[in-house]
Image 1 (cartoon, rainbow, N blue to C red):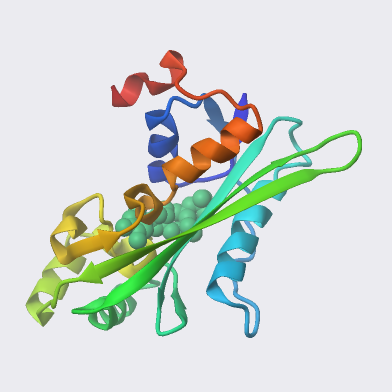
Image 2: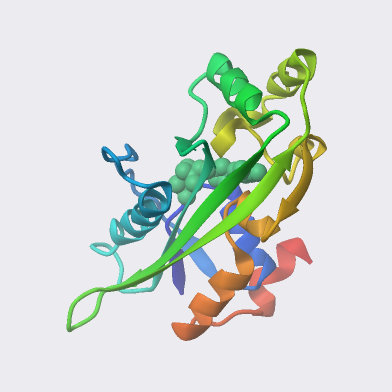
Amino acid sequence: MMCLASRSPRRAQLLRQIGVPFWVSAADIDETPRANESPAVYVERMAREKAQALLASTNEVVLGADTSVIIDGQILGKPVDEQHAMDMLKLLSGRSHQVISAVALAQRGPDGDRCETVVVMTDVQFAALSDAQIRNYIATGEPNDKAGAYGIQGLGAVLVESIQGSHSNVVGLPLYETAQLLERWQVPLWQPSASQETA
Ligand SMILES: Cc1cn([C@H]2C[C@H](O)[C@@H](COP(=O)(O)OP(=O)(O)OP(=O)(O)O)O2)c(=O)[nH]c1=O
């Protein structure tokens, strides 16, 4: 059975949505971007390192993923505190930004490790937010564990005017592209036993 190398409840739910059976095991990796590393390269490297970190402990296919918000060439990860969340939401207010997610599949093999990645970008147009709206949103606690300090799948839907591209990519796992990758690796989808919780 596939291993999901992620502590994100969103990623687990998205995988269940498409009926992929999996178990969860996550390792800690250093998530610091390298000097002059482009956002797409960084996000892809993070997905790969999250998956590869588990190859020492399983022979199964491992899926790792990473999501970052990009604005003005800057990579926004998760806010470290409320001030940081406020700064991020002010920056996003009234503008469009990119959400980049990468998915990596990795597996040990007799002839060496295998790894394949896919990187997906979605444009997100934010509404113009008042300071009071930003404060109220932060007070809900939703921004805490999310790249760019918002969740499009939750209360944050109110802040998003429109998107161009994949919605699941913004939530943390681009389902169409992930399914294509899984099919190439012959990992089964649409298994009834895996999708019960979201049916
Ligand atoms: C932009 C956006 C991000 N997010 C979340 C998805 C990711 O969980 C998180 C980005 O952080 P990540 O570092 O990509 O993932 P994670 O630390 O939550 O989980 P793991 O590394 O164990 O896989 O932000 C949303 O849930 N909704 C959104 O609209």
